[in-house]
Image (cartoon, rainbow, N blue to C red):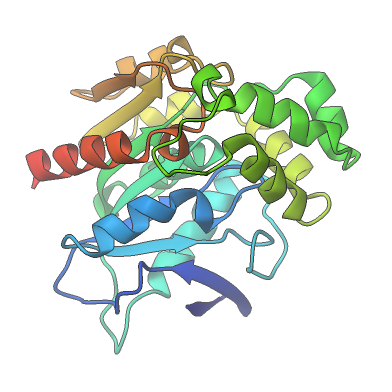
Length: 271
């Protein structure tokens, strides 16, 4: 469905369900150069298992209009304006469960730090204390060079995903990932990666988190290895950590069923 935030159209995937003020709300935030489709299976599952699910195309991404924010803090502030616009008939969404992948995990973390009392829980998938981006990749994305799509899909998907055998028969993960990045408007991917590279406030934000938190990582992640979030995990009291084996950075795409199981189990435990 379409929403209006800051006078711009925002496309939101809801799993085909109408908003229900009686249900808890789960907001899923995609990564750099991606859109709502990265959360396809998780969106449908949770929308049909007790949650309002809101998966926006971030500004300037996918089907959403507007200029993409240039910093993680600005993305996070926009996310709360989006949540405020999501209620219906005067029913403001007061609290949400926030989940994000890669750049989306930084946005979710920054948002939880900005509004601790409105964050019911935090789920960080493929996070990093400082998401440094290789200078060659920053240069390629800034130039809209297609070689950037090859570099990201090569490093982003785990080795098993390079060979096929996905849970969804016939799905070509690297090809799909490359097509998604290629569809991203010019300059957006480069701006996203620069925002990740420039943000050094993750540890400070983690210290402000006051809600149950799940870290979901992958043993074969070459973009944000497990050790990259060690400081964040230490900074958040009683944070839970899960590591999926034989999986790369695109965790919820490579292992959709396991991702659903781990998020569902976490949300059930804190209910």
